[in-house]
View 1 (cartoon, rainbow, N blue to C red):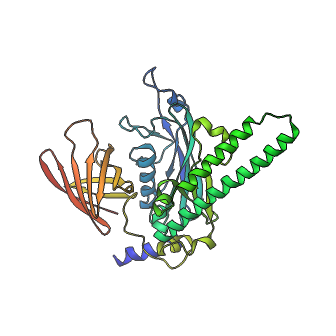
View 2: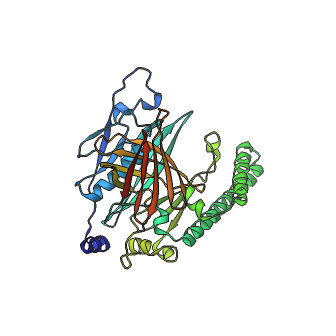
View 3: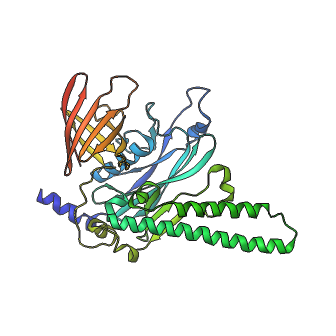
Length: 373
């Protein structure tokens, strides 16, 4: 135990950059009526990162990425391709997927997943993931920032959004004045842009900023220049995106900006201060444990304000991912398997520090459950 704790606290000093390869999804159309968004799958348009080495850290990172992005258990061995299981629905509507590494310096591994999703129309989007390379722990803003720090971030983002829209309106009105003087141009486009940005600014004045805002609508990234970046989505919908010159807004926090916002773990990781153990929070982490004597792997998303959340788990022997929906009530979790059958098993868990204990209930049976880091 003492040896493990020593490695945990000192790991940042001995870890090196992680080795990562790109793997392409192997897929062949099984029917002529395959969805249009899958047209490029057979050409290799779906790519995923895979951490090499087979270490606990690499395995944890792979598990998080493949469970959350693709909806499958991570491949057990290195290779050029990976298979999509029929039960996975995470890539439904995804036309393309690739990644770019943002930071890999032996302390933090951070990457952006760049995708194109299609429904009634296609849109590009980005999902960011960051990890502590000493342990493989997935990093979210709540892991690194104090509650008051997140509240400061939320207010700063709202102020930045207002500033950007006000600046855009002023610039557009200057253009409008110049166009009126020329008497040669159609003013309809510039008037539409002004009206659109004024509407966006009005929305910002109506919204409140809170710690929850920082978690629910902002993407969190860690960059190689040791900056932390919060990104908020654009104001426009697809139909009026052409009017949105502001687009997505980034709030960049440099190390000098972070000191008063971080908790002790965040300071240790981002500012290289005295090492401390990570928090006990197990949401968004890959957990291992048992249902009875059967080994399982589980990952639960962070609960919303109403306590609801989703997640996945699988039996290690079969590696078939099962979806979960749940609700958190204080330190108690109530999970239900999301299956087509009417008889769905339930899992009740109690949060006790860095471990969860409870019962699996199904098929008229009650089986003990234990999960932990």
